[in-house]
Image (cartoon, rainbow, N blue to C red; front, side, top):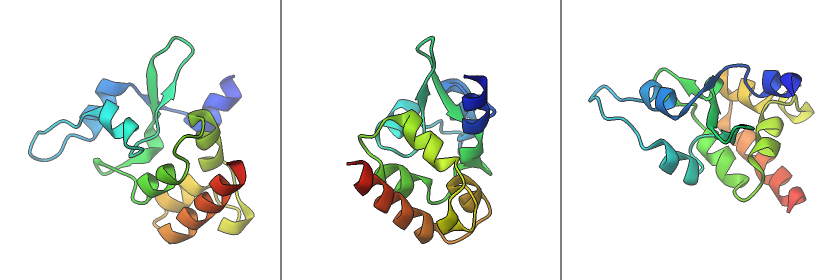
Amino acid sequence: MDAVLEQLGPDFYDDDALAEALTGADGASPDVPALRAEHRVLGLRSADERWIHPTWQVRDGAVLPGLAEVLAAFAGQPAFSVATWVTTEHDDLDGATPAGWLIAGRDVGAVVRLAGETAARWA
């Protein structure tokens, strides 16, 4: 299980830490459960029933651009499967992971298209 968490993370926020990381300049703290329900952040249930969120999905106080569209494509799929997909290298992305591709600021559309194609195969 450690290898899986290393791939998916390796670092995680709990709900409170994610809310703090996403708190805007106005001091407004987001509703993390709502962000999860709306597929705007990736949340995983730990073995002890806590929510954890990979830290790589937050950049400069905001959710990684394009991630919400990717997560929406996988709505209804198991979160750990989606997390594994997002952190696995893909030939269609020049060997990059979708997370790495988005972090690098590359074409969001390429990842969203690949997510849609993959989600259709999973359905």
